[in-house]
Image (cartoon, rainbow over the protein chains, first blue to last red):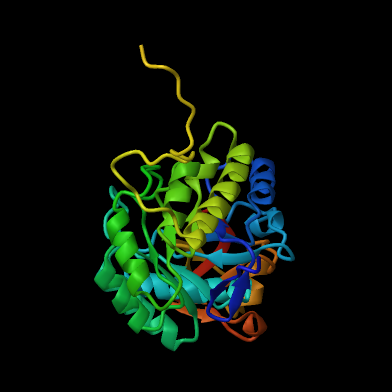
Length: 261
Length: 66
């Protein structure tokens, strides 16, 4: 089946986007990326340590032939910071892709919708392919789409919480109304969470902690790969209707009879 | 002259370009990007863009993240 994920001018053969944070080692990260089947991985942008003379960075551990790199603006609390971070990421990575993340509060890590919208408008104008992290808020998602974002990325649950899809009805409404891909970003804790999200019809899932914080990250990456594929196929197949009472699968006619006592 | 590099004040030789600054810091130019006073300095401009007294320089890299 040719089921390609299209984001702006980009196409991906996997619907799973994976982070590079929190792995027990870089070797485990690389193996997990491989096992997940992902085609796009995220990185963050930070100041260099002036004492570190090695010059080695995360980019030395990512095969850019295999993976598209999606830089994020994680840690930014204002549109201004996020815009400069995006511009630096573009210069560093020679990509116009940006995962726009403007945080509103350190405990919930919920996005600041006002600042996210302002940054999105500016970045779209500046030629970026903008993928904004947003609340599971259909109105905010619509507004980001109207600003020209190439996708919207509502959270399933708080970043790093692993709570799964907390508000499936909102995610469904977002998907029904969106004309751009909907990518569930954050909150997926295990394979069933990923399948649930995909069965709601979303186009892709971005996850990091769900894989990296598993006891066996590489095995969990493989589980997530299968869950995303299974959820996608189930969505495309159209599930049966739910019913309250049983409905036999075997014929109820031509049954044998025995003499009643 | 004095300039802020990644939030820290540094005493620097006068007349440094961005390329000269990176050399001064003993940092290779690969794997990083630079902003001066909140504007990106393109890699191709590293040996033409000068650092002046009071400038705020940010030097960034890609790190692990989700």
